Length: 234
Length: 272
Image 1 (cartoon, chains in turn brown, blue):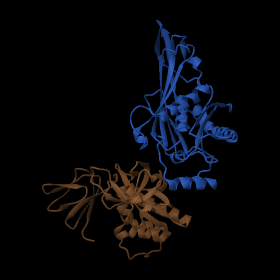
Image 2 (cartoon, rainbow over the protein chains, first blue to last red):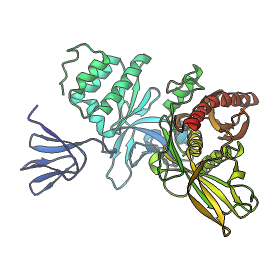
Image 3 (spheres, helix red, strand yellow):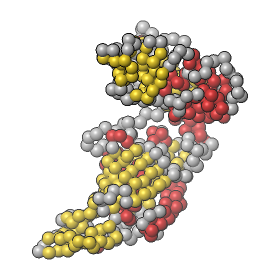
């Protein structure tokens, strides 16, 4: 890792002065780079960003999200995607191009309360995000347990190159689907593994801002020292 | 409230666990959540209490002031319970006029206190048909995680137990405050409400928001210190069988006794 300077910042704090690139949650005023949210600032490879400590989920095109059906209209489903925006899944996406509101019943495919893994197909902040389930591993989630964490902690749960999530999955034999919106579905044949995986995910959520988290999660899960070390430590 | 849509996975899990006699949070079916009662939390109110039922949190304040009696109840003091769910308490609550659920909540709490005759309202009369003392019991829900009925009820009862009633005298047809003289509220019995939800064939005590979202029907039973059922409210679109109702009333008495002991302690010591 290159030289990374981390510091807690609040909105308005001047993180650094100099010819650096402004990335997430910062803005540039002349040559000053100023934070716009509460979090940890990072300066790396000539760029500056702030990793927020809290925050809602703002959809981004291509994000994988977990949604909950909260309503239907004649042409689409409405999804709660843990965001100020409501996700829309057009009926054609599930029924195909010959969908007809008179012939097909939306609720027979996806009913209120069903959980769905979907991808954000399009979103530009002026209209509600459009979802799609036209991809491998997308669609209705039939089993597992939903765990909610803060959307800003999702990158930490995934870890560098997926190190954190791999550790948890390997140690508990669980299958974990992470929605970028902070909703996570964990399924595991073994009930004990399920409980451990849930505990680990919640631990990451609670301690996301602390260093050496992967090691701590490993010790919580009882992974022997040095195991799974092909992944990079944080 | 009431608009919570539970995801299907959670619903299945709740139903599966009930078949084994378990609940999502590890409680037994007839077990209440951790209850804490704290009184005197609002120094400027005549009486106040903060009640926590795990994540459900309520603050209740009592305001006492002289008032005109109701025209048909000239020989009784005034007792009014209200409730409000603050928008910060729950993502589904918006500011604005109270919804049906909140009105129901306030009325169930009010009925519990009124019908058990917890307070001897006759003692609150200053001059018959002209002037009485009024008790205004306002509950604010700080955090909502199910079973607001019981939380508000316990908070209201605890707030009444903790309150000091200022003394008023009638002078020239008008009530005048007598400085420095206070008394306890004229309490005769301790109402304890117990709310149960029916999910399928199972009766669970003290339902959480998740359990409320998948319950078929709900019942709140308020008993007095003698163990009589004094008030009852059924909610939800489904019903109960006769056997289930009998079971519910038994549960209300057995669970209620434990809560009443804590309230009695509160009455004796002024604190738990």
